[in-house]
Image (cartoon, rainbow, N blue to C red; front, top):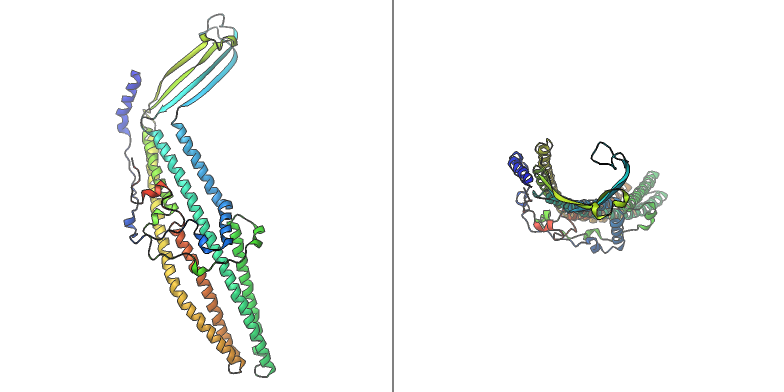
Length: 477
């Protein structure tokens, strides 16, 4: 025991060789990012239910249950949980029972006296063993903390995957609604140009127009049918995308029908950049947790410079000959400490410096994710503000085009205008209708993207990490 204490004292004297390298990076704080406005509204967990579209509710449920990428994220959570459980198990005492029996010849020139020396006998043992790593320097504790942080980060990654999946599905669903709106416009255009062709044919018969105007009308009707087919293709592609996001194949296409949502009513709009952005985005929180995990890794790497003390004990039976194995005279037992002292190990310093470098990497990744998140939110808000203005003007342009076309059609029917004038106003009307449909869908998509950018359905109270807040410093050495 005195020798063990002397070794411990020696290791403490050698502790001055432990490097004191510190990370160079600093985590960004909210005050450095311009997040000083009022907190944004927190959307309900199932925000899509406010759309009152039962088909989309079912699609989201199917996606959350069957999307392969989400399944992969959830599998990573299970793997991280298993790693954390294994780390906790390493800190507990280990008990085993070992037994063996071998038939062998014993040497005449070894420790066995006659009649065993030179004879053939069974040699066996059965014993239970206890081993416990006494965590004097906190290495096992640090490894457990690191594993728990990995588990928390995996759970946050899964939350981010859920949020990204629902956002992508919402965008695809709005795209399907837009495709149907464009198909409606294409149908109206086909019918409209069909009427113009009939009108041109009547004017030719009446001698008012030539065959040139009639052929122009026929060509414009054919182009309208081409646009209609393109709208059908866009609709089909949206259906394919939705099926893929829900983890389904071609068998699901026929069951996805026209949405019933109103894109103009999709999600409320916040008035300013949310100040609680970093307290609600699961990917940001995951990056933050990974920084904490690297600090635990540093602690474990530093603890490796100190001696490892293991308490061991055993009890059982050892005997030569099967008949003597379980007798009282064959009993053995023992206990004592085992000390591992790393006087020289060229791997320890590089391992510690590598752990410090991992912290710098994690901090840089966290800062990059935060800056990107702020940019995403700012972009979404700017886009929504711009679309709000564009929609007002586009609605006015559409109304004016409707009136101009109606007037041109009446004048052409009355012989007061040329077909070229009708064609010009009709083209302006078609483009105004298409642009309005596209802008309405784009505004809805921007709202969904904004919701994803600010953390969506991930409540700030769901994890201890989130409750800690942005400005709480990460645990350090």
